[in-house]
Length: 292
Image (cartoon, rainbow, N blue to C red; front, top):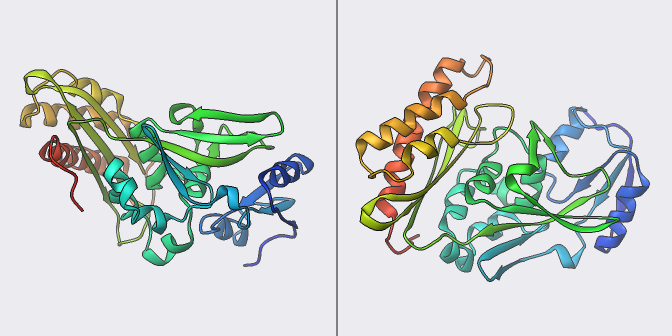
């Protein structure tokens, strides 16, 4: 299929891009295009203007700013995946990106674009939720920071205003003593996950779990924190019994309806299994140097 007609705006600065957003009732922002272009071709999206931010130098690259990793809107997924400074600060980013589609897609796709697209089955929204990251948005009224737990509203729906652009995402460094893991199950490599889990375990005094953060994709209308599973772990010894209890508690987070890919019963079973495995991996890495 072919996309519907739209105006094309190639912005040279962030201010130009924001002005173009404000001037059109319904616009779309083109960065890598790996999520946007298929929705245009299938006419799932019908913007009256397409705003290309590919030439804006201020939106390129990444930075480590104190305890946060700043990934700007035009930073490609493959660029972020193989950035050694980012890996040293938070290796969960590389592990999660390794599960996103295929390498050829990651060569063009952007981290910020995938997060702003907010597909319920995509891996990067779950990463942002699990790490407690945030989206930096720019609009006519200036810049604002949107925490991950307030950003994702529904499948392909976020709290970005119609006249705002996501200019960066901020992801925290992993705290000392924290183990990490990302696991997912898909029918074929590169497909969207039927269920995927980001897990972070920070160990505390006495060998108990000081903080557990878990987020999942593919199980509902948006990426979600697995708060019941987290509650089952915090303050507990990281053993098979506590991991099993957390994995069982995660089942209730599945809200996706039966579809051609999987039933809700299968997704519940799958999520329980993946959470248990991810927690075991995260615990095994806690307190150890990050290794590629």
